[in-house]
Image (cartoon, rainbow, N blue to C red; front, side, top):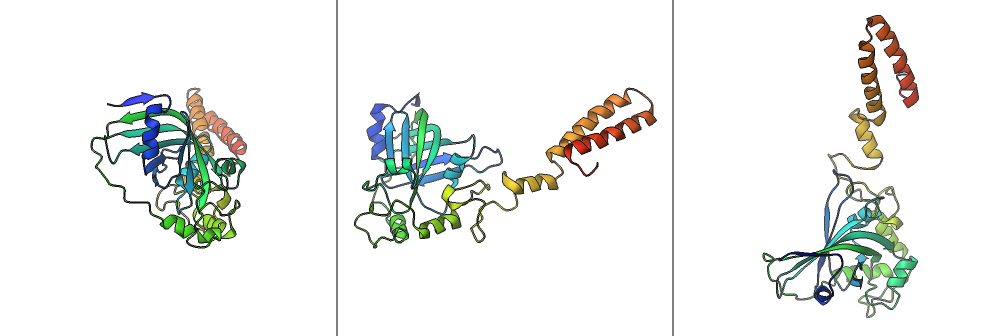
Length: 282
């Protein structure tokens, strides 16, 4: 049976720590934005308290979670665990998260140089304030046997940290990201698929030659392209405002009678409103 809590029950903490994979889900504030779900592996999840958790965010071609957490007024995050062996269970952590980029005091405090979770390619810590916890049955989730971790991501980014490969100590890379790693971020982590800014260190807007992720053939929800799209459709705020004002005035004037007087008054008002909003009508 499902149950809800205001914090992580102590009885569930050992079970959470045993899980080998979890998922994070987020979305931009715009209703036209894209909902994202990302799987996470490795020993990267930490329960700081019954109401606070964090995980190590590894470098990859995607950066949707970071974009959504950085969006002003957003930060909404859901983390999901489920049982693949033993009794069935699904657990969700609901809350708001903050991004602590690599080479910041918060990142280095949570992941000091000798921490084994400080893996090659680590680009941020995602800190989440847990506001709600929910459990459900998970009766339809199949059984899976854990065989082992995939080392490929760590192996891939080891050279980016200027480490010998394979490295016997994955926590020995420098605190400051190398130029090679920063170049990768600038190439692939600058924006989200909805055009939101991505990893702060990647820069925004994207540099020339960066991989552009904003979807083709649909309205981009944010930025200059969104403004241009609204202008093409004739729905800029200025035009809407002028239409509303003129509609009210015409209705009032028509009620006063006298077509010539109405025409003169409306023309004068059109010029005043156009000057106020900077429209070329003026």
